[in-house]
Length: 294
Ligand SMILES: *Cc1c(COP(=O)(O)O)cnc(C)c1O
Image (cartoon, rainbow, N blue to C red; front, side):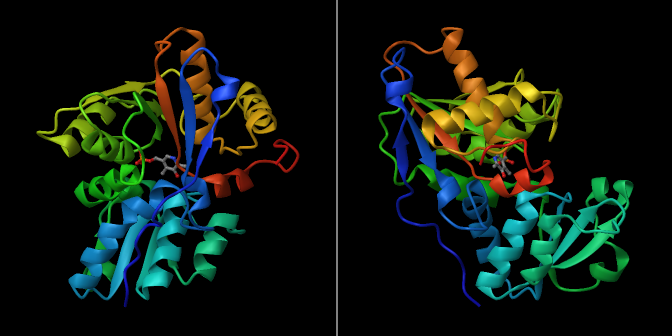
């Protein structure tokens, strides 16, 4: 068995010519680091995988939905590391598997379908609970995930004033806040509607770390994995302008939120902004084919 380690320096694209109201706008292209283990997932998984291998566990178990980036990334990372993987999927087994679950299976992941109650409780089904599994919490939320995500910044210059990321569990935001300097501010754009547990969940990961972070909740477009035509129109325009594709669950909302805040005058003229492209493009396969122009 072997572990995975992140690539040394992900690409950075400059968008400064499109946003003259601030000093600098860059995008960290984590969507390009791996074909399947894209974006923040590679970083969040690395220490979980290491612990599982060090502990001699016979397989890795994790939770996710039918279009989950985390599920397909875990399947691919486990295949690379040579560890068995089991995906516990929310809801009844559908007649036709989603492209994401199909791909996870092809990567060697064994799938089991849980009722919503079983899934939400995140306990192992009885048939699994007697075996020597290593469990990765849903979305990779936890200390190992946060420390892994903190390495996103290890190859990045530290003169950015604002670091922006999309937020699901908040693990990535916490990792950025853990790694950044006291001069920097981390701004998370939530992909979820309301969800008051998010702030304490992030604070719980950071514990004694003092960092300037803020969560913005007004760019969810109806909630997790929800969208409106305005979001897809924005994503198409953003792609035509910058050449950067985004996903409708996370990074589309991130880039939309960034532009909206910029228009509101949120950023000072001297701001140097880094947008973290956390990947997730595979999830666009759940959309009808003609909606996105990429
Ligand atoms: C999983 C995911 C996120 C959310 O990351 P958290 O660490 O759970 O907040 C953001 N963007 C993309 C593309 C993702 O797949």
